[in-house]
Every structure is written in C-alpha cells, then in structure tokens.
Amino acid sequence: DAKTTQPTSMDCAEGRAANLPCNHSTISGNEYVYWYRQIHSQGPQYIIHGLKNNETNEMASLIITEDRKSSTLILPHATLRDTAVYYCIVRVFHHGSGGSNYKLTFGKGTLLTVNP
Amino acid sequence: EAQVTQNPRYLITVTGKKLTVTCSQNMNHEYMSWYRQDPGLGLRQIYYSMNVEVTDKGDVPEGYKVSRKEKRNFPLILESPSPNQTSLYFCASSPPRTPPQYFGPGTRLTVL
Image (cartoon, rainbow over all chains, first blue to last red; front, top):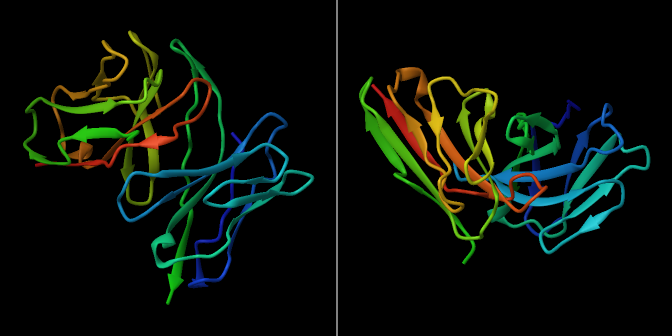
C-alpha cells in the first residue's frame, strides 16, 4: 500500500487559500490520490481525486506533481466551516472473495483550523 | 437528497446483548462498507459488500456480521458485543469501481 505523509496541523486565515500538502512517494502508476475531510466526529466527506492531472471541482483543486510523489489540496477561499481533519489517501485495491474492495486506508490526516 | 442513513446514532448497551446497526442508502449504489473509528487508529474497514448477497471481510471483521439482502441496506450485526467494540461506526456507499464517496453520519456505540 502506498503510504501518505501529511502535516499534523495547519492554520489558515478566513478568506485566504488553504494549501494542504501530502507526500506519497511510493505511489504506483495506477493508484489515485483521494482527499476527504472529516468535521468533528461527522462522517468523512469526499472532496476530490486525481491520477496525474490537476483537478478542480466546486469544493477544491488538486495539484499533483509530475512525478506523482506529492500533491496539494487547495481550498481557494477558506471559511470557518472548512475547519476539519483532511485526509490524503492513495486508493488500495484488494481482491477478496467478494471481488475488488475499494478500501480506503485513513491515516491521521491534517487538522486544518481556519481562523477569523 | 442523496444520503446514507444510520440508526441508531447513539447506543449504550451491555456486554453480550445482540444489537444491529442499520445502514441505508438511496442512491442505488452497489458498493457499501462499514468502518470503525477509534482515537489514534483512524478509520478501519470492518466489512464490505460489492452487491446484493456479496460480502467480504475488511481489516477488522472479528465480532461482527453483515448481510446484504437488498441493495439499499447493509446492516452491521454484533452478536455478542464486548467493550472493545466501543467505537464510532460509519457506513459508506459508492457507485461501481470507486472508493466510498458517501458516508453516513456515524453511530456512536458504547458497550459496558
């Protein structure tokens, strides 16, 4: 399984861009990078995913380096409601008796605190 | 509204008393899974299901059972709960060939 490394915590001022880094130096060629967030004890929320091209949706942008060994999640205008733990995950495939398991392995993530 | 629902949201029970946590999704997703979340251990997968009547073990299946008789429902069964199953549980679902994209609100279980 490709392992990810994220800073434990980060701060961001409200209205500014939040840039959350993630290292995944052992990622293999067909593994995607997924980002989720979890607001205190709520269910994780899917944000975005990508393979090698940069991606953007209504929530965020994902920048993946050309060698794919790291990525950055960008929240362009952070609000107080964006305060959460953000998880960078490399998708793992496991073939069980039930077929492929799109299991997610959640690490400790980055606690992003958006300050007024 | 697309959603995954879980019931109950909170439960306090005693050792050995069988319980079921229900999970239901309204998106016609084939893939569903259960995770538990414990401090310092992150989320760990308990069981998953690729489709009706197709289930398999995740990383921490001991002490749990699941069933998938209908596409929308994926209940988690604790036949004889023990204190080490005290945890926050999440159900998740997703379209085919994608990791979980919708998580339920969580069920906080305490086993005394």
